[in-house]
Image 1 (cartoon, rainbow, N blue to C red):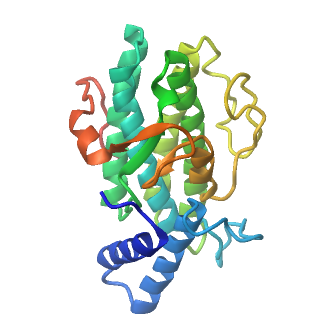
Image 2: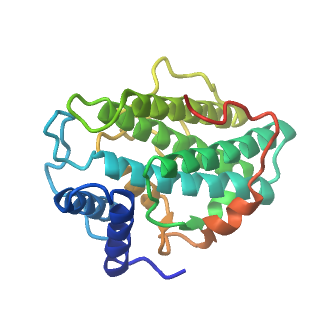
Length: 274
């Protein structure tokens, strides 16, 4: 797969938006393309988000938390999650219960990805650089999952807020689907913490922008985020790469190849949203 650069990624994202939103006016499609460029910038391809980009969720919202940006970043995150939860049990020795939970999570994530793309989301890349350390031990894998799932919880809470925004262009159903995803990611986090010997049901409320209170994680003491483009930045800071090599030793994994062997436990249920 061709490495993603600003020159290649922006036209690709723009073409995807043209395809998905072909019925919209040219002006609307241009606005969506501009939003996609903002996502790419947030992922480190076009530089950091401009100062003051943290915006409210009001009717005339112009910040990075657009429906299009959220769907693109969420779809890309589900690509990453599918890969980690599929490859993890292949490479790391796990107890039977933990292995079963992670394999089920892999199926959850690929179904989430399929749902997001069916709703018009378009991942920005299917080629993910994963640090070798993620798969070097059970503790590292579970710690990565606990941190990653919390990032997803935070991101889907942003999605719930934006999709339910008064005057927006989404429906209550889309907001509910984001809430359904967030609930599942919370379960993934809880199970990872439990397998680490920590309290899994430690949250009274799902954590949004509060600081991480769990000791011993890579993000301990760090705050959450209000800006959806922070999600890939945090992951990039941990050594992951989206279409390009990350900052730590690792290797590329291709979603289209890995997803062919994603586990599919028969007792995974509620496979479609209502």
